[in-house]
Amino acid sequence: MVRSWTALLLAASALTRSSARAASSYHATDVFDSSNFFAEFDFFTQPDPTNGFVQYVDAETANRDGLAGYAQAGVYLGVDSTNTTTTGRASVRVTSKKAYTKGLFIADIAHMPAGATNGNSCGLWPAFWMFGPNWPNSGEIDIIEGVNTQASNAVTLHTGAGCSVTNAGSLAGTKLASPSCHGAAGCSQTTHPDARNYGAAFNAAAGGLYALEWTDDTIKVWFFPRNSTTAALLSNNPRTTAPDPSTFGPPLAAFVGGAGCPIAQHFANHRIVFDTTFCGDWAGRVWAADKTCAALAPTCEAYVGGRPGAFAHAYWLVRSVRVFERAAGGRAARQVYPAAELGREI
Ligand SMILES: *[C@@H]1O[C@H](CO)[C@@H](O)[C@H](O)[C@H]1NC(C)=O
Ligand SMILES: *[C@@H]1O[C@H](CO)[C@@H](O)[C@H](O)[C@H]1NC(C)=O
Image (cartoon, rainbow, N blue to C red; front, side, top):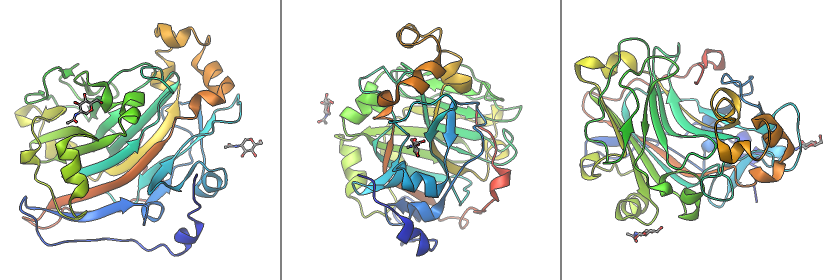
């Protein structure tokens, strides 16, 4: 199922594609897909900063064991679903080499880590997110994230002190848990209860597209189910043609900065991350309080370690991540940081 990318790694060259300006004033700066993904993302192999019951493996190990590769015209990022373990389940976490400040990011995702049935992803903590150096002072944007039996996506920002947002303009039903984005708790939005935006229901509907627009004023996240008109439009567009977010309709989650949170002071130089971890500071901490999961095993680690088959659906299949930046004022600065500067996620 998973094709080796070793030959591609050897031939790797950083691909940057650009196109003529589109109507929206965004222009394409990068496309990451099955033609270049593993040349553009690094494997994170340090201990999980969120204390997950996980062993993040390097590129060679992931490739050898079929945990990462190109599959079904997409990028497969999976976990070990055959071995029992007492030391942490093998998984992958990848980070873009490039870092971005502001822009429009569109991810076409066919499958995300989940359990076999909706609302039962016990032990899992998948995330698609971005963050800057010196956490949390350059900010973190969690675009897709959740744990255990969570039914719909949670979208969260983390910042240094002095960032208080509103969620004016979010889709009806999306709720902001707290206005302050400071630190580990962050400002989290529990999204509109359309189960298709997360987990097994997302997968059953063939996934969809997530869009993030980050400006000096707002951070907005949209979800377009696979069978929606906008998903079809975005997928059928020439891949480097910039879409216009003003035509997207109400975002799944909007974070409005204003005077309470000058976005430009709190968010900069973000790298893009996909990972799948287990238990740890979130999925593990709430295990006992989750009746469905707690009924399966006394601890999150016992379940994750002892039931490899439960994680057969715990993989990302990413068709593409496209990055667009504003033409006006030139490109935002993009920097590449050494791995040692990787921050921590909460
Ligand atoms: C499963 O365990 C075997 C034996 O220890 C090991 O060689 C293999 O790499 C493991 N597979 C995964 C996917 O971690
Ligand atoms: C998309 O599929 C859902 C079921 O998953 C259905 O309720 C909805 O009407 C469909 N929408 C369109 C535009 O076909």
